[in-house]
Image (tube, rainbow, N blue to C red; front, side):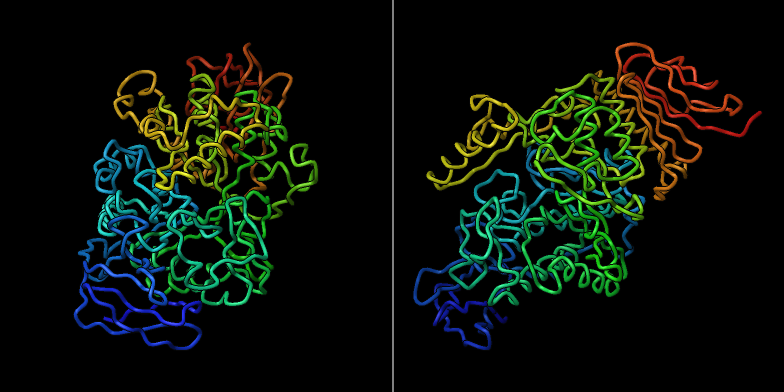
Length: 581
């Protein structure tokens, strides 16, 4: 077996394996290699730089003892996959479900998630999006401070556990999207800088040093990241990537790292013969991410659209602090539905500058829409879900607008039944100084939202994690059971009516009246009318000669005939409009 490592900062590198050190041969550009015939899967190994204690492999496929332990040899070809007939699925028709392995079940493992996949299928979900699983410090965390990008987290079940989950997802007809973090690495257990110029002083990110994508020595760093992206898709059979906070991937190269990832994923897609997706998260409101490369874009498949979330949240909760200052009532929701970005080049009071640019003629299925996600829940002081911030009636309105919107819809785990458990920010740093800094820094982050420091749970306290574990027994009790059925019916409606899957934005027409508290979304022959006011409202819909029938309503007895739909307080109805009688 051949071992290789890029370590241009070292004069000498030894492979530490089986209680002995093997000198490695230095090659071009700082690569060291050695053959070890006795090595086999399961063996522990590390690299000793210039006689120091062995470090984990930067490309370690497994870290059984965590970020500070030795690496483990893995044979990716040995896993008995059963998904040979799986050919992927189109993103444009997907309903995504974001989940965190550690809190999705009490056991918090890949294997423990498998028995619950049938529930997602029955809900109507078509793709599972996993929050980052690359090895991070300790046993509990969100995963965005990972340091061993090639190693699935040991506490979740390691490489084979992840493969079993993906294989089971495919058996249930579910695609799998892996959340990958390439804008920074966590500090705890991060040894990359000892190997080579993985980081650059040219830039800083909000989380620390920036990965080196355009400075001296960047070729191998770019290869490190691109190969990691391809690994999730090839070796773990994942169907897509969600790239975290790409606005913090700082790269002035003629070919941006994102474009390089997209190009190589497309090549892998052709090689494997199955659909592969690349989805970005960005706060820039820049459509160039998903515009074709021929038109000067990066050519990614889709991006998260926070503006729909922010507009819905502001309208349904009344919050206006922090970045919600840029959003108002239902007119902001209507703009998001029509134009994708609310901040599309207009002045942002929160940023105190103009922000974003118009989405142009891009189809709506290049954008994801959602009422909740891990960031928007977990980055609140107490991690409150929407169910803690708005009435059940408003939860129904929010779900209806997300699941009838022209965007690719995404749910956050537990959202479908209005989970009462919070999703709080939790960590398990072993370094006491770092742990204290994280706890103190977390409390200081929320001043812009007016949240008190004493209301922010300590991320290091195990109880913060324990509070965030889903209580699945709620699914069978009212009102959770009824909200779950509401989501099921909405997703089924989206599937059964072609107008709701149409990505053409010129066929989306949303209007709202903030004073009256109503919004009307028209998508071809389907109308969605909602009223968030505390009184009855009449929503004008046009010609009284059109025949209409209610497809799904939050309240009984809603009158959908005539020139206006009459809605009781905090209600929503989905209507199909036919030709005149």
